[in-house]
Amino acid sequence: MDLAPYLENLRRDLAATAAPGGPDVARAADLLSGALDASMRLCLLEVLAEAAEEITAKLPAATVEVRLRGGQADLVVTQTDVAPPPPLTPPEPSGDVTRITLRLPESLKDTVEQAAATEGVSVNSWLVRAVQVAARGGPSTPPTRGPAGRRITGFGRA
Image 1 (cartoon, rainbow, N blue to C red):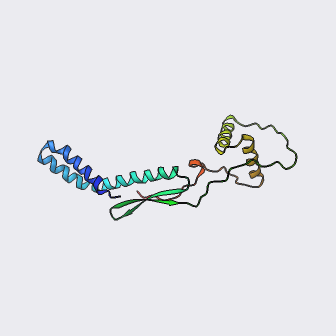
Image 2 (tube, rainbow, N blue to C red):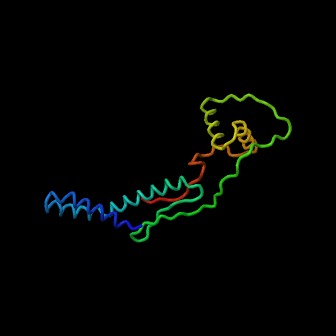
């Protein structure tokens, strides 16, 4: 994507705004637009980088990057090898099933209900799976939350 037409439009708008002020103001606007060229280019690149981040967050298996080549900014889409997780099914009980009473703080109960709804399983199935993971020595810290549970990687330059 060539940024030059956008920069030229900004220069033209500044010149048109300065024109009624006379030749001295028009000359000052011309000098100002030349001095601000690098800053305007950087601002446009920051907008593109932020847009790429937002698009990446919404894509299930791809990342979007802004790459600079000369005066050109290219948006590059890279497919990732992350396959969507298989649908979660509640574990089949092996042996007798027993009931227990579990007391949770209201805020934790709400969080568990939201997590179960997000994964499309019942609260009971979600809790059984969480207990199984913990009993097997699974992660001792809760997973970090990202958009839709995906991990986003990349780099940025300002």
